[in-house]
Length: 425
Image (tube, rainbow, N blue to C red):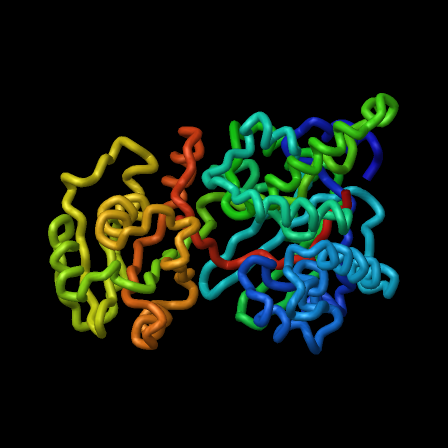
């Protein structure tokens, strides 16, 4: 790709970048689950016998004594050393020219194909890249330290957009060539990556995304916030000469943009450790003040909005909230996660801040309803609540209104792999 294409892409919402990526022979061993879906022990089990695993970079605490905090500076330094080791060993290769890439994930009978690109930090500031969640300062600082210390964005931010025929047609053209990688991960998800070499196709894709009014963060709010924090710090340190020398690498962050009509959100369920001093019978009586409660002989997976499954004392119940309690005009208040907070978690169980209350935990729908049953029957939890998945139209409506969703509102599947492609900064 010539330098003219890179210059034309400057200031655009997305642009090509020089990717750092695994050797084809190592990609299946290196590409790893996202850092935030595994705890330390799970990551250690996956990577301890695999020196190629990118978990040695994304969760470098696994290579340090167990008593060291994952936020200790030694962790970030170890991540940098491990990444440098992978480069020196030749396990990672750097493409010669800026490129866009296509990334397809196939899970069961569903597939989604996204464009891997360097998105503009300025898009976060102008809110062309819209968020729907608050970030936690500790997690934002963690991702900021990680990216700035290793000198790269290694975990992509998952963006989504309202699909257009133009982008769909361009992506289909790109997928017609031979892929760089095509492998099946241990969870059965098939990952395929293409590198686009056609300069005209890249230019058309950059222009097609520029024509969009907005794109939306589906997953990766802390990573995108970290990118913005890094850019702001680097701007403050830059000299006048550096500021006039073209767009710096830190003004971009690693993203994959998927069309909304291919994106899947699964249920994100709740488990609570106690009944706030109530007996199961008294708890159900209070629930019945606002919900219709129907016993069920089978596990309850909600089939529509405003319906919930409840597992308590060895039995399943179907809960339905009366329409009188629902404000359909408010994009946040009408969400099932909001309604559950307002009508059950807060007034009955006394959970006022689900983000920080240690009595509540969250279970992604990919794990199934049986995990809810196991946690309650083991005595670890007292009650489990299954939700209907939040719809992507609701995510966009909340973001368009400039509002944020309650914590743990969305669980996207399949998960993107860390270390599949890296953007250096």
